[in-house]
Length: 205
Length: 299
Image 1 (spheres, rainbow over the protein chains, first blue to last red):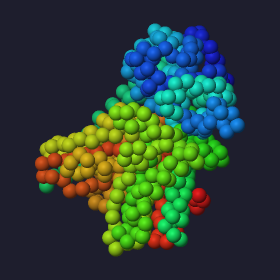
Image 2: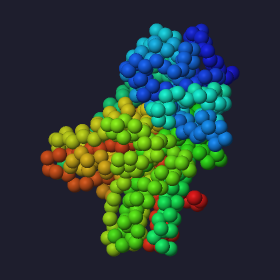
Image 3: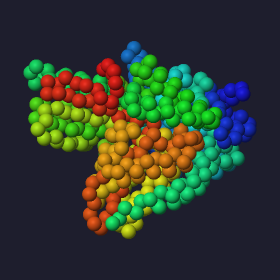
Image 4: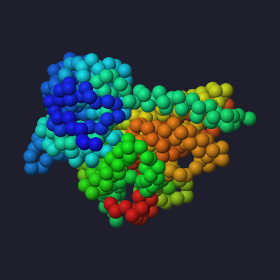
């Protein structure tokens, strides 16, 4: 199987053939945006310092280190994905407001995001959780940082990445949702499993 | 050694130890992950395990934290009442965290409540979190370090059940939480459960259960059986690495208990992600140390 690579600016047609469970890689701009960035832009109405149209955002709070010889320039030490579900509350509005095309995170997102992905031709993908040095190795350069007053994890780190992945498609442009599908399966199995266990736990005298 | 030199030594060792534990997983976790990885046969589960082991290798080679979320630093201290530096431990641990934050480095993970500002050095109100147990007639100290990451702290919960809801109620409560919140918390998880009479005791014991090595068992026969039943049950759900389905769901299930009130059964849940950064160090009365969780570790 050939390696599917998305390059920013990402166009709708680059995404429309993708289906949940597919594996892709990213070239170009990846910008960290998590809880506080979503809150500032959507809830507090502050203008974003970075144009995200056609770009990818990363639900991630990295460890960055300022370069000793170049003040204001940073090197990424570790950068893995954070729990995407935390952004469910504002992700739809954030997608609509920015025109971003790819969300990279960890774990599933809910029906509101799936709706926004379908309506705006956007895709949510997951990078394997905890694999932060692997992810850092795919970052070519940290170009800039905005809203650093939010602190290191919450700031917007603008990065250029090369073959960043593996990214597993978890919500596609048809609105299919891999984790919701898995969850339904897990819940079905759970019923059987729990029914069996509770036969054996009447410890009351 | 005078007191200042002793303090410097203790701070230096604890800073290096804390940083080290963010870059290398403990022996029991590595062994379990290797075992679980070998059982997977789908491309998706293999892809995720490959990424995990590549990451651990690179973290080791490049001397970097394996996961960017180096957590809120928590120390669980078992101190002998005769340990000569008992008065110095707390202030030394605070200094060690500040030092590790710069030297390791660690991510800045302490946001003050109400002020909503990141302190920038992982130290803040009651942080690092320090839990104390005093061991009588003993002159050593054992310190567990745990990096409480955001992702694996999110599924944390506790509830007080009525006795007629029984252990059934506790089992359902655990399974509901793992199949919803747990799948996003970087499985395979280590599941810590506390059972007690009130909510704070159950919650604290659930975290202490995560400190116990994988493969050890509850001190009570029924408790050990319940651990095994929940572990098998969760694995049969086949959540897989990253929640993307696979042969297993968890690295283990550890339960700790305290006597309950006749009218309550409290249950607490804490989860550890696959990158379970838990480490144990022991100092004797002359501050010679031994790292118990990571054999052959060199700070």
